[in-house]
Image 1 (tube, rainbow, N blue to C red):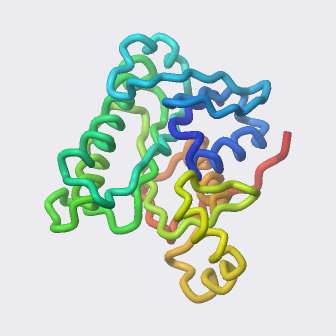
Image 2: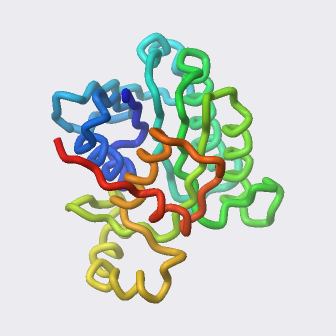
Image 3: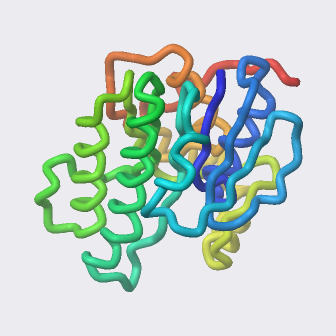
Length: 226
């Protein structure tokens, strides 16, 4: 399986990259982002592409892939709807539009978030924008598309958030994660569980196209290391 990862420098993207490199069935990984990841592995090819709303110059390099894991995302804190939409909705749909033109047979997997509003009309701005984005992605003629809506994500294996505040919170909460998992199993997941579930969906698919946090652990599968 040949896969593309957007956002491999972020916390979720780091987790997906780690599991792709460990999975014997993933033979090639193309990383796309504004900045280089610095990741080194025989499976990895990387494209640094600063303009994420226009992929016309690199579309030919996106052909022939089996799956895309779209892990780019930003916090809506302090942003108005127009700006948030521009850096989330517009970028995601630009990438998806390029991919569906050159690799329509791929599976597109988007990491959304718990509480996303599928109506696209709710009062919560970020949930409304993400819901509209999910609907637009599901309407594209990919072989398959899946929306993942994780709740609280606990990073494992040395993975860290790029946001200092979030990194501090995760470091503080980390030792308490087993307790959180026991008390709130419907709302918490690890980077490893999320990544394994996404890879499993890319391989096997499912009837359900929008996956809530409760669906994620059950999709995780045991991977063989390299």
